[in-house]
Length: 186
Figure 1: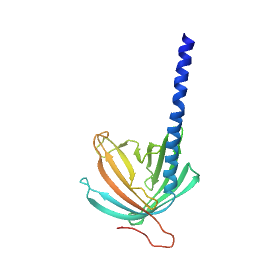
Figure 2 (figure 1 turned 90 degrees about the vertical axis):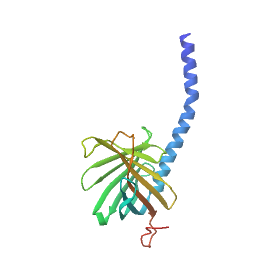
Figure 3 (figure 1 turned 135 degrees about the horizontal axis):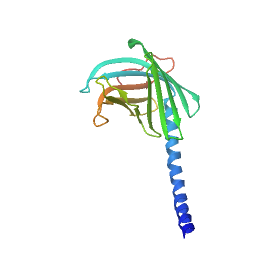
């Protein structure tokens, strides 16, 4: 009886594995496509937002991404000259954990790690110590994605994710070779 129960369990389990494998494969493919669509140079407008969502300040810059390991690891750089800000960026697929991670570090030396499920457009940072002595976390969401543009929204929480406040909004436009920056309105 024990063997029959064990055999039935294995049959049921194996019948579910192909569906999970297909889901996992589709998520991996969506994650890889996200990285592929990011390769290249981008002109970016970053709007720093007030707590009410209105724009406090805007700055222009560039982001550029290229493959280190095709379909798995991207290397990138962000430059915002008017803020004297440069950061090194890596995006990578962690197939075993089923996530895409992004790491970023700038002149201040602070390493940010942003993690999100494969195939999804949202990533969260690790928790950090907030100015008030508690903890905070950042959430990044990419949306309105086309071949030539996408937007990114950064929000933050200091109450464990019960509420999220606006941090910044970025508009990415693919840079056109030989042309000036394509920033601003449509």
